Image 1 (cartoon, rainbow, N blue to C red):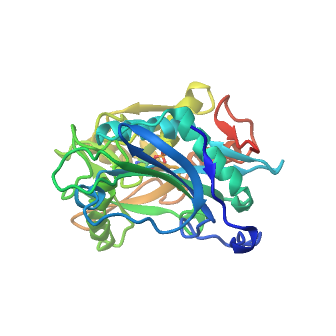
Image 2: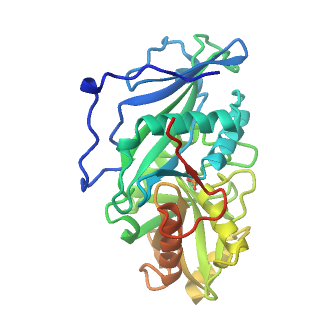
Image 3: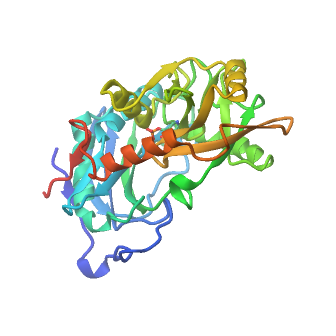
Length: 360
Ligand SMILES: Cc1ncc(COP(=O)(O)O)c(C=O)c1O
């Protein structure tokens, strides 16, 4: 299948924001997007077209039954002026996992990578180079069949859009978050869709997020269904750091999203760059260890903010539990610096982590 290009004439294209612009996260769009249709059991017509509204029938199943998922990937401009995408193959594999969970068709990893590379190549002028900025890549797939009744859609659309973005939080890594430990709301359960980037998971997280904000904090730290174990944050995996500097990430199990960032941290640990492991994190023990000082730092891991340090946890009785001294710890800072140096080419990347965008 050859990708077709239907590009805007040069004089109808928007220009990228000038160098030095303080970019918001996820708000800006480039001129083009990638699209591919699924029908008759096959993917058809891969194409790069102007970024524009999509026309769907009101009966399209994505509107009614939420058969839809997405991915999130970042591309960085290195000092050599070339663009490098961070581990897109990991996201492509996870996309196929999400597709499987939601009974949607997979797309070969190579086909996904080709689509991403071609689109980013067309929009390469939009990849920023300022510190903490990136070209955010958002692949997504949704059901388009005009049919009422809950079943797998026979037709789908796969799209990729791009957003030149700055740091997720104003202040970037230096923004310290507080998390609500909620026993009221749950993100996922064993046997559910928590391991997929299903759109519905995020729809269901909006109310808990507003609930968290009513406690004056940003996000919820979700527990498992019986409130005994720490799972993850709405858009990040969770970590804590022990006194000896070991990062501990909750075991993925079957209700936690397999974060590419967490996987990468564990691979860096396996290569001897830091100490990290996964284990089931029991809430009672976590609280005991934060209070005794056995746990000295904590935070979130995810593509959007990379490492997001947590200063304290709020409970539903409004009590607060501070981690360490409530500020950014040295281990979290070191991890953030190591990771972003790899992404931006200031430190050597492990083999296969950076995918250079070809010039087609
Ligand atoms: C629920 C959830 N957990 C964790 C993450 C972090 O995953 P990654 O590191 O692949 O971005 C994300 C973001 O993709 C997420 O939505």
